[in-house]
Length: 225
Image (cartoon, rainbow, N blue to C red; front, side):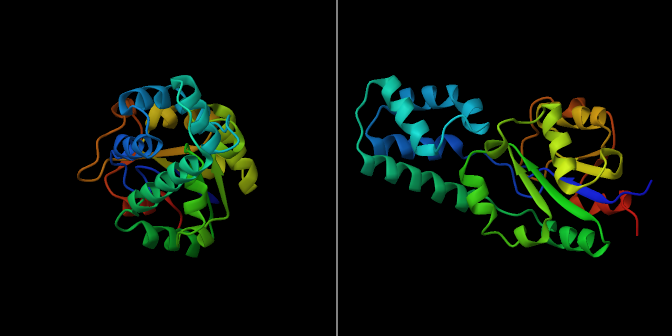
């Protein structure tokens, strides 16, 4: 098959997917002087809303959780908490070995390159700072577009923004929430990237029965030369 675009997942695909969220949110709770257990519990309840842009900002989300807990906080505390989340996120987003080289090679083939990520608002900020960013033709972040994978419409949006038909597009991901099956339904050519050393496979990822590669460079075997 001939393709004219590749869309990459972010976490677990281009960057390592390793647990650090609870550590970050515990630090946020301490900065806000709220009970850590309560904050983690209520913060988890707002995960989907946060990922799909339901809050105007992370600060608004923090304030809402604190109201639920019945804790008064100051604007300075909110600012500090937001800064902690941004700093943690920046330090823990680490490109996978070979990721930059692969993206450059895909671009050298003349293919369009897109990103499709479920994420919170810190990630688009950090993305713009990364060496990856100028190499991509487009990036779709769930928190910006109001929907998340595995919703079919977000795959359709990613293809549309690249100006490519789904049938001409490879989708590379670690298969969180069965995203590869949905990508296949949309007409894309899905390829699963197996976890790197130290990464835990997403829940249900092993149910994917289609193509897979055990390292990023293996994706080149599925692209035109």
